[in-house]
Image (cartoon, rainbow over all chains, first blue to last red; front, side, top):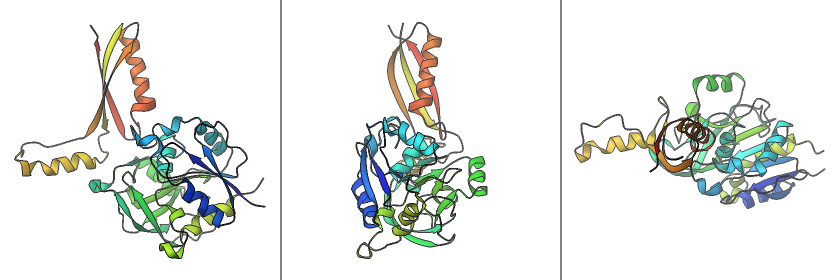
Length: 223
Length: 84
């Protein structure tokens, strides 16, 4: 059975087509879901793509979390449905309190657009299920506000429960504990700053994004 | 009654403030070598109608909590003045 991936389009999202194409390249079907819709339709997983939802006004993700579609995303997540936020999508998920912590301006106030070396830190999430811990990946980052922060208690919890999903090797942005991605307690909601959809072709420098997006497709149980 | 509100949003103590730190590092070169502990934040001004100041403050604090600040990393301070 073919998995069906919903990609949420907020005004200002700009990676929705890349995400859709990446999944289609892996054999999945995709559907772009408008942020004003109150239903996700029949999808097996939801991706909040990168970009600048609602212009990133106020704070990245602060307005997007009130978009009508987010109520549907929250119930989908609560029912165990896989939800992945990439870059701006990660910021939306923290603002919506579906993931802990917050993403601050990068250390050094530099916009970063480069390939990042990453290490898989947990196989408990839907994008790393079946991927050996310690696997090295090279995936592009492209952000100004990717400096992950949280209080000490949350960090202790994330570490103890294996919820730090990805870590940078050579921290580019000042993130606490080199964190590049985290998941919720059940592992079905994941946020990451790197863009796996931009690492799908040898021609573009890396195919390591296939590891994460492929793991998500593997984790999806088609209803 | 109508009140003018000023809300200041600042990073909580202990949360790294790369913007404030960058501003502070620039100051000695400009001759401001007596300035320290720079923290960057945001300010919002708006009008609010409410029967009394307590109600207005409650509404503004709710607004801060739900939208204007991210309580994970930011604190707010609210100043209200009765509008003429």
